[in-house]
Image (cartoon, rainbow, N blue to C red; front, side, top):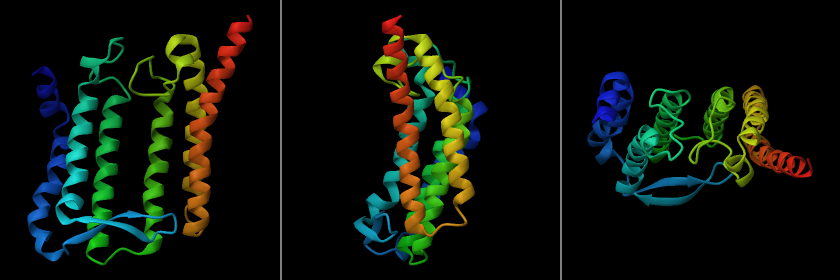
Length: 220
């Protein structure tokens, strides 16, 4: 109950955003076809369709589920390293809601025939902003089983966790900033290739660095 009271009192704006898609659906339901696009390839072309019910309701329901999962992390974390209002949890909850709302808006736009191929870059831009913002807080994360660079070497060694997340923090910020800077200058195809390359780098390099720290520690 305390967790729900916190959400209604301190994060009421998030709850409004979570309900917003359900309030809009009745007004657009009859304007959409029975099958709507829900997946796009790297070139920005639709390659998968779903029913109108799934396309309109899956993302909002997923949004609610993920929000309350992150909200209750302090309750279910075995290490008890989190507090409900401890950064970056509130920021992560809000970013996640806004990101999935953006995806939902994108799906509806496409279903109504207003989506252009180039607009897929905006989805990549949203993810880039997420990495830039979260990168600033990655180094502040304490060891846990839910958020962060969770590999065996970080979970077993607090110093490994600290150094890995410190390096990962700089890498996430640099990667996100680079993608934001390049956004206006590259075509969708080139930007897509560059985007996934950067994502692979900022995902793999911290894990490799964690393993390197583990090997160095084993030698010593």
